Length: 80
Image 1 (cartoon, rainbow, N blue to C red):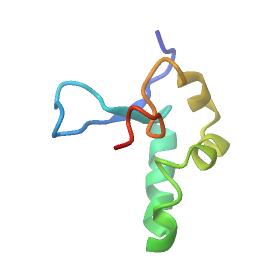
Image 2 (tube, one colour; image 1 turned 90 degrees about the horizontal axis):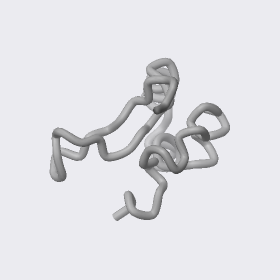
Image 3 (cartoon, rainbow, N blue to C red; image 1 turned 180 degrees about the vertical axis):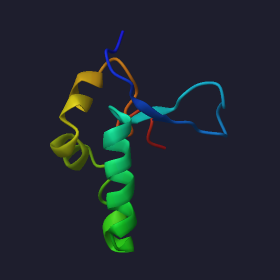
């Protein structure tokens, strides 16, 4: 069991009842990423959160602990 409370995104086209992937290891990181993204230009948004593993893991160090336990946005089986 994960000792913290990760934040998930749900893909409404797949299932409302099952999370698609984890986007942050806690609500604090989620709020940070969300607010940071709102201040970015459109050019930068595509290269940051939630799909850029290097960017996300450089800030949310606890998310490294989720690898292999929860689906992450940059996992091969998530990308389409």
